[in-house]
Length: 324
Image (cartoon, rainbow, N blue to C red; front, side):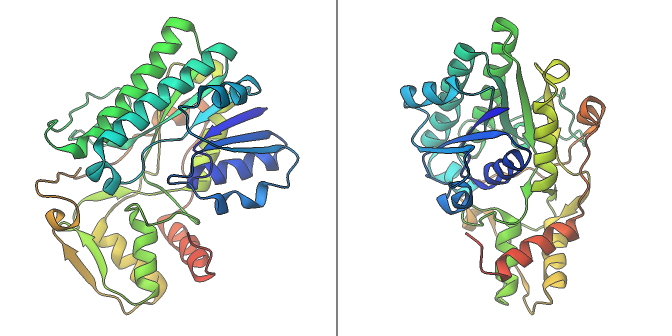
C-alpha cells in the first residue's frame, strides 16, 4: 500500500510511518513542521520506500502530486494543543477546515482511501459517559475560543462524511482519546510528557484546575494498530466514525500521583487555576471516556497497554534524553 500521511512528522504520524514501513508499505509525508519535528522522521529518510515534503496543505500542486501516487491518505495535520487553540483561534479554524477540504479534494481526484483524524473534544459538554459515536454533541458558546477546535474538527467530520455520501469516497473518521507515548512533546500542553519531565527534575507537577477532571490515555502503539486495521477494511468502515481510546478512566490528580510513583520523584502536586494556565473563563470537559464497542465489532480492536506501561515508556524515552 502507498500511504500519504499529512502531518506525518508529528507524534502519531512518526509512529504510524514506522509501522507502515516495517510491514513493507510505502510512505510519503507532507508536513510544514509548524508543530511537527523533522527529528521524529529523520531515521526514515534513507529508506527506499519513504518520501518527505516540507510544505502546507494549501500548496495544491504538491498535495496533488503526492495524492496522485497514493492508495490511501491518513489526514493527521491539524492545529495542536490547547494553548494554540486559545491563543490563535483563527489559525486553528483555518488549519483544520481548509486543510481537510484540500485533502478531500485531492482524495476525490484519485479515489484514495482516506482516514480523517478527529478528536474526543467534539463531544464537548456531553454528560452521557462513555461517549458513543452517535451521541448528540453539546459545545460551549462561540464567545469561548476554546471551543473553536472542537467545532472545526466536527466540521472536518461533516466534510469527510459528505464526501462519502455524495461521491462514494471511502472515508473513515477516527476520534482520538488522548493518545500518548514515547516521543510526544509537552510543548503544546500534552499532560503526560509534561508531568514526566517535571517529575524527573523533581519539580512541582502543575495540575490545571482542581485535578478531578478525568481522562483515558491510549498508548500510541495501540492507536497505530487501530489505524492500520481501519485502513485495511474500507468496505466495513467507510462512511463511519470510530472512537479510538482506552476505557481506563483516571483523574488528573491520580495521573500526577502515578507519575510521581513510577519515577520515584520528590515532586509535589501544585494546582493552577484555569484562568492562570489558559485564559479567564476557560472551560474544560469534566470527563472524557470513549465507548469503543463499535471499533471492536468492526475490526476486533481494543486498547491493550495499561496506564503504567504508558508512563514507563514515556519515562524511559525522556530519561534517555530523546524527548522533543
